[in-house]
Amino acid sequence: MHPELIQLEKTFDKSILSRIQDPMLDHYGIELWVKRDDLLHPVISGNKWRKLKYILDHALSIGAHTLISMGGAYSNHLHALAYVGRELGLKTIGLIRGEQPDTLNPTLVDMRNWGMELKFVSRSGYRDLRHYKDWQDLPGIKPRQYWLPEGGAQTLALKGVAELVREIDMPYDMLCVPCGTGTTLAGIIEAVPESVSVMGFAALKNAGFLTADVESLLSRPYANWQINPDYHFGGFAQVNAGLMAFIEAFELKTHVPLEPVYTGKMLYGLYDLIAQGCFKPGQRIIAVHTGGLQGKRGFD
Image 1 (tube, one colour):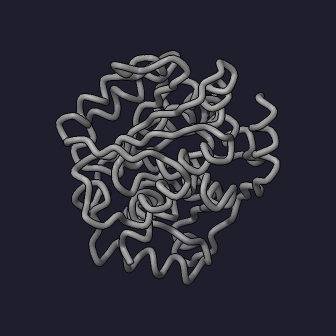
Image 2 (tube, one colour):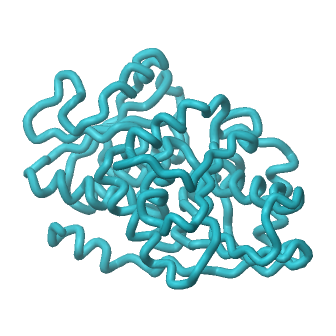
């Protein structure tokens, strides 16, 4: 590991396991724990750090001086990348989906203040960017520039996600995680014992393509995983009153902060499935909190 990354990681807090105490869970005989990756760092939290860690190590090892990636206007990935670029002394360029707004939102302001160059691209141009997967694939990339696809969806990201799994020091029956690109899900599938079931909760509508995307990242076929497509609430970053009420009640009851784009949707879906009797009594389920709490500012 590059010395600068070792020093940065030394400033992080621990990602603990928190048991959720809830009479509803007791009624159905389910033991639910949350892997608190949101506690790792105020900005580079959750799966953002897990995915970036070994990608950054590779970039530093080859002498890259510029990191280029893509995301939406509230992208947790770009937000984390801008911050870590500043910390490591690397230039960062963010390719933002859509037209430049008259006023930048708080996420974009943070990114700009941390030194990221913001370039806004059309939605069709943004879709084209998804074809470029490897760190040198981006057309026109220059020497010592390093390309990261959307969400850091590279095989190196799986190595960091595997560390999340290895930190779990208790037996469990199922591991759940929200899905955007499916990269974190792929890393978990590769790392858990095959006796453990893995369930991803799609954060976006029409997410059927995610299965193939996850399979493309895996080193071999696995039979212990699935993606639930039913709790997107109308699409990526879409919410309704029921979801927001669930998040508010969950936070009051557990003191675990949630955001409504990823982890809030996953936990809503998990509670709903438990209430439907989809899990056998006595099961221990661990849900990964993927951080990204800065995105909650878009719903204030």
